[in-house]
Length: 252
Figure 1 (tube, one colour):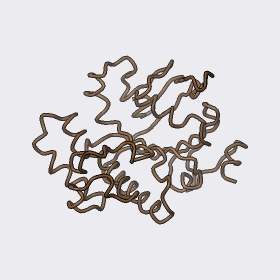
Figure 2: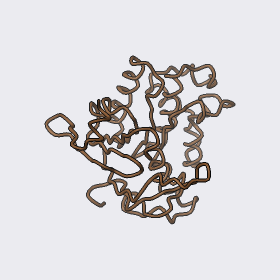
Figure 3: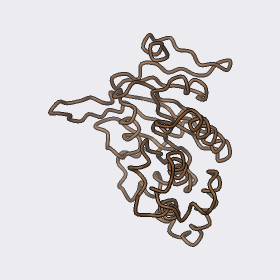
Figure 4: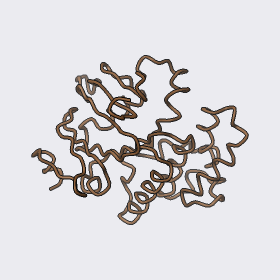
């Protein structure tokens, strides 16, 4: 794989119309995501972080550029092909669990669905998988029979993470996973994420506007502004430091 990257992009661009105005959300972005690392993508709201993730995940097809997974270009793959070679192994945890978790389903079904969908020949063990993965989230099996509205904000995020992890992915993208939580819950969820990453050996990409948190946990940080990557920095001697004026303003 290129430079040991599990995913890399080449000149990725994505635009859309907002209020009859063309917005260039992502402009010629080329990045690498390496095996078993924690990568942070930071920047102010509207800088293109989420659009970049959605373009990489093929949830929103990029206008131009290429995305490679395990050295295979995935842009041109059909939805059926993506199900076999990409989607089970590259998973997403969305910013708002209330919008991404089906309110009409119990937790058991929410967690089981992706496993059964991507691995139908193993559907008979889906119940066992959902129970095991939920316990890793620190939630008892009694939660399997609860609905979304019966869960706290932190519990909803744990269920969303369980749903992402049940297919044993190689990489998880987390879009503002700590947003809206108090400091105690942020710390607990962050500790859980890092522990799960160490256990299951997946790469973790975290999108956030909180550069201080990212400095504490990431191996590398990419800073975005107006759809472009303006700085990429790597941990050295236990610390991450920035040279670009915009990055320093984010910290202050």
